[in-house]
Image (cartoon, rainbow, N blue to C red; front, side, top):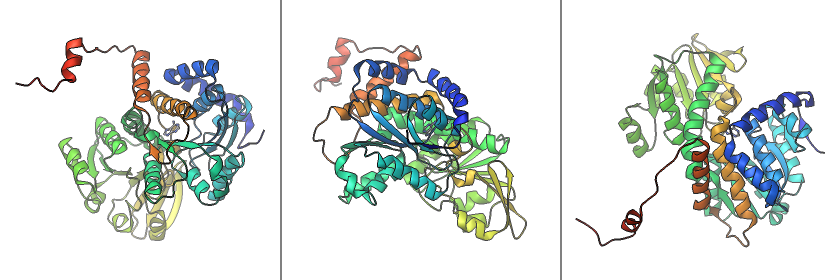
Length: 417
Ligand code: ADE
């Protein structure tokens, strides 16, 4: 079986953690039990490029139970949990290419290895696999019938590919469905970003000035949770509507040039590059902590920071301290990569439960389609409703149903004042 992982001896530890996560993923478990009986994914050859975490492991088990053949590679050089990767190979028989801390060449070698299996479906987190297929591996494009994408960043790229006529096969934007981004992006990123910063630094957030760059769903969750821990939260934005929303949520809104002077902690969650750059580093306070929770490590201009620094010392496992000529120290967490996955374990299983239920049911839906139009597709609304319904049931939450009169009122246009 082809694989490349750090240490197979970690497999037992990985299995225990995968099983722990599974206890918090009841929707995915239900789907897996049904898939085992019905085998709806028979014939699918899936190449998945995702963060190799315990939650992803349970998704891979589900796809395999559904009859798919699966290969997994990591979607980020720093997010791989080596014990999970080992368990996937040793205990679950899933070809896995992932080592925490690989360099860029190693990272792409793993994506290439996944594509060497000649998949007919891609499952991507950030669009790197799709980009590789549409550039260096174009000869394989005709074999691929469809795909899914997990992230905001990836979907933005796919829509651009669609606009430019570059997209070669249909892809479902799993990120854009409500049971994904309203929960995973908001509550998942909110909690796990703070988790990463705290595990890395052991800071007390109460009383600090905590700057959140970007007020999309991830930024909203992060700002909300930082406030909950007693931080004075400042939001930076480029979009006037989001800035207004942040202001009306009670957050101070300021440009980065100003926020950077006051911040104790700054976290980027924008999806764009150079959000913290030279002009900002030049005015930051001594001891400031910088982190990124956007998909790629481009939001903090690390090259400019290194240029300004007279020394760089790793002061804790996931913190590098850059000392500037004037003695000020700037602390960078998790190399400016996704801090929630680089310094913690990513989103908790209970929220990945919904995202990965969306992924599994989207693949089942794709397996039933023929001649799907080549464009970015939404997750079918019935999948979204089903995931929410089952999640509620697993949380023992009941809701009301419309009476007949209410139902018909909603469908009439003649009743008014
Ligand atoms: N993205 C964010 N958190 C994640 C997790 N726990 N597993 C997989 N992908 C993730």
